[in-house]
Length: 336
Image (tube, rainbow, N blue to C red):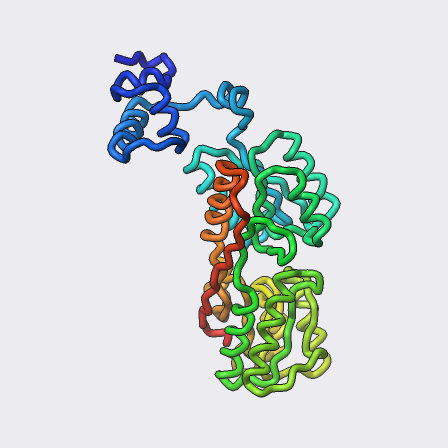
């Protein structure tokens, strides 16, 4: 019988299960070829005995810290906060803790955050919506030799694990919806020019125009920061220039919230005068005074899949990097 004040060890579990300590270690660490029946028995005994691994001793023995690092451009953004929570949940289920470093949209702080986390001997690194995505920066990160996953970004030239939304298809689907509902003309309040996601969505917008036989106009495209105030300011300028009918396709929901505010302040109605769409489906989208039509990003699955890819690479450093592209879903509400 194990005393309450004694730490349960692999030896205790092995004695209870009638197997070797090596078998217990293989089961708890997901290694070796142990039968399903034995694995279930060992795991059940470990849970019943409230086994907790000695992480300090383990890290000294196998040079692991059971810690993942997450660098995020702005954790206050509603989309990224959902992704971070999913990362933390999935990591915890696998026995890992998470350190989050916020860069506040600064490329310099992003580089410093990566260096800080690497110095803390993390076992793997997730970069959520990173700002430094040029090939040279990606190669530098890969050459560090640490397991690495990009979230909400991809690379066509550097082999690196990544999980992203299918932004081009999402952009195509939401503009096709506007075209099919007879909205014309359509102007665009896009994400910043340097945004990889924004450029992919613009490619989708253009494809929808081409498919419908409509002429694309570059002057209908306006770049915004992913902020309510930026959407408000950009929409106000469009209204001053005479935009008062058709539709406004916004690069994210926050831009759309600002655009709707500007339209209503001018005495115009959404969607009667101007239809408005967003992208992301943040929590407030369905609770706005005019519920927002938007593309729903798979935020939870994005974070969880990122952790799964990272753990694959941690367990097998020779594992070939994979790019996972997740679909978005059109959510039609009152704004368009």
